[in-house]
Image (cartoon, rainbow, N blue to C red; front, side):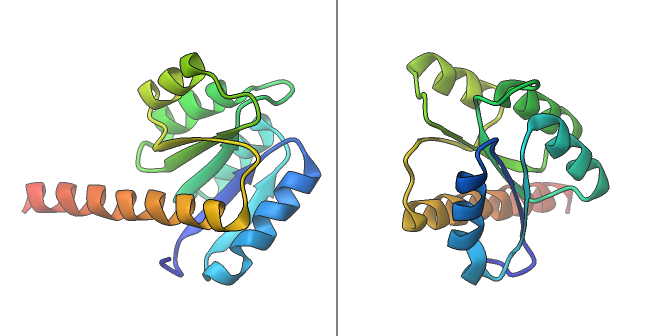
Length: 135
């Protein structure tokens, strides 16, 4: 993974945030965690991240609202939705709103790193395509 990449982990469960941070520790990326959707938006306002790993079910501002806000305000940010309550409806909605991937929990460390790598590869290709179009 690109060591300049920055990843924000958004989940209301501390054990999940810590697990994801540990899984990404050797990736060479900058990682940070937020315990809810409102904090995630505040953190993004301070430092827009390349990738957000986003839980859907959270108190206050839920994951779909966070996804909408991120894609509206920071469209170049990739978002991977990770949920313990997967449904076809929420998967379709997440992709329609711009999520790069939709993954069901539980998620092993290798799966998390693979999803992050795929999202960052997608971002690099998207940026390269835009760059080629403008030159």
